[in-house]
Image (cartoon, rainbow, N blue to C red; front, top):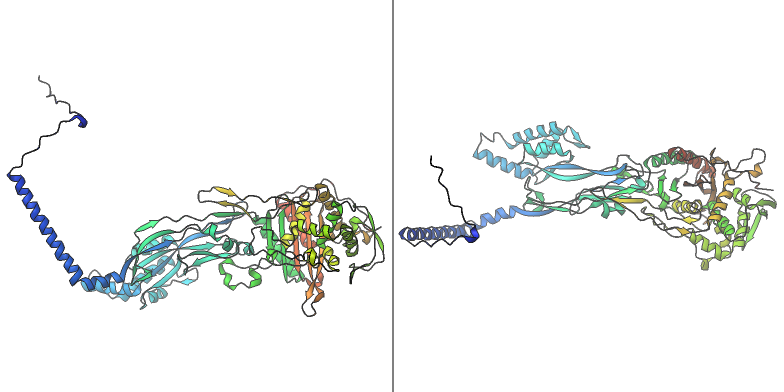
Length: 633
């Protein structure tokens, strides 16, 4: 049986021989002739069309072009979130859609379509609008975030004799898509973003507020207050771009569903803060309740991690709703903890104590003969209680908050060394914590001191500081003499989840570790209580916590009476700063009350906040109780 016919293998293209050229015959000449005729005919038709377009129809087409043109529009990027130290969301954005219509255009299109095909487009535009309104209302419900979307309200919008109308500003994307798919020729959908604050007014003085700004180019969520504003460049990201058709030469009137090109926007970065959301909530509530109880004008508290300087909580008694910040007063929007300077009173005495110990001038058990008053230049300074000259231990001077005893020690330190110590503690300069609107406070330079200035500064008058600065002073003593500038922002987090930790600020040595430990031990006696002898009681007894050594200091500073431009006898700033625990510091708490009734102490509020911290962070109890110290001999 014969096998299949064998086919010779093809040679590779690289070695194929060239095919002999075909000779031109009659059919080829015919094809060339026909091609020339067709080409000439096409050119003639194109020429006729060109004359028609540029001549006969020029005006009509020009009018159409003016009514519709391609417009590039920037697309805002997704805004980054704000998180607490554990990743809990404090602020984030969700996508919403604005549904709009061009009523005049929609009516004309319907009327034109009805005239051409009444069967396919039955009834009047009003009938069609009623149908659209019914569908929209059933899809969206009667109200969307305060905007009415009932059938009658939507119908009235659809039949307005205007060029552009927003039907609803914040529709859910899925519902908006359903409506646009149903009526693509009439209703358009526009991307918008809505800022969400899931915890209401929690930390609003820090976080601030942001909202959708339609008037911006491009429209976007923009930070208005607080971190939202100060970190807007980080949170906002980079805009993208789309191309759409717009109407009547107005770039804002986008013809529905004409998007043709898109450049993807780059989302903003998220911010991870040092704040702990649970601590912030508890401290904010305690501060608010205590301010009401004491009838203080303002109240604030700051909690710092003693080892890192991180702000664990920063709370004010006045807050606001970030989603409705337009109704907030200036006092509500202000972050009093950093944007309000005050005279600290006796809390500032820690500067004298630290300097005196650091320069070897006094030991805790040294005895000072403390009179009831002392004259500095033209001023006579007294203690808060009347007494003759009494012997006090150096520790007792601060535990009982003796102005006279403090000034006796400060005179031994000297003005130059005291001024230098104020600088080391960071007073008179912003902490650069990252908290917006921070003030610097005020410390008079040494070359401007008068004779009585050195009678004011050591007892906490004649200078001002913010609560954050005051708390940071005690952080230095808690951290073995090294002050670490406080910070609020821990890290930036990219779209892919990549975390970029913020560089921790370098520490500043204020005093030696030995001095810091000595001062902590001395200031434990501020919370000392002796039921047998009131002379051995410290001024901050209510701050004590069973099982924990507490080092701290009370403060009461007279405010300025604007009538006489002198110190008031009835209005005070009441302060407290404390270290928890004193033998193994973990946290520092600073408190300020502005003009509480009767100059009530801030020590009870410290007790409540510190007690919460021990439970929240499971702080171990002190190895031993604070030893009893003889304050007054």
